[in-house]
Amino acid sequence: MMLKRFVGGLMLVIAMICAVPLAAKTAQPGLFLRNGQAFIFRLEAGQPVDIRPAGKDEKPRKGELKVELVDNFGSTLTVTSEASEQLNYEAWIAKDEYANGSRTKVCTLVPGQPGFENWPDSLTGLRLTNFEPAGDSFGCS
Image (tube, rainbow, N blue to C red; front, side, top):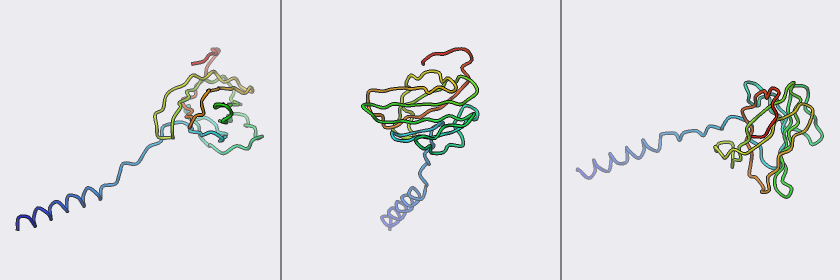
């Protein structure tokens, strides 16, 4: 009798554990892109919004940015900004949109001029986030 109760209780506990939904993964803030992808977006509170896939020859409109990550003897990020001011931002090398990743150095974006960042290795992906006005300063960090 006691064994039946124990087994019944154990089965109840297992059923309860199995019924608990797994915690949903939360994507890190920003835009995650993989090699071969290109996107156009605008910024809101320092984060990319209204993100859409970009064609190879598609240009960003006023107030938008275009990013493209290509794998060609390493990885190259091209960022074209049509924002009204210089921008600093953060780039994180990451395996997917959920990973924290490791921060990598990038340079200030100048409106109307493409910016290029290169890495000797082929990156799995890159997350771009925390865009902010650079003022008159220009640098790489």
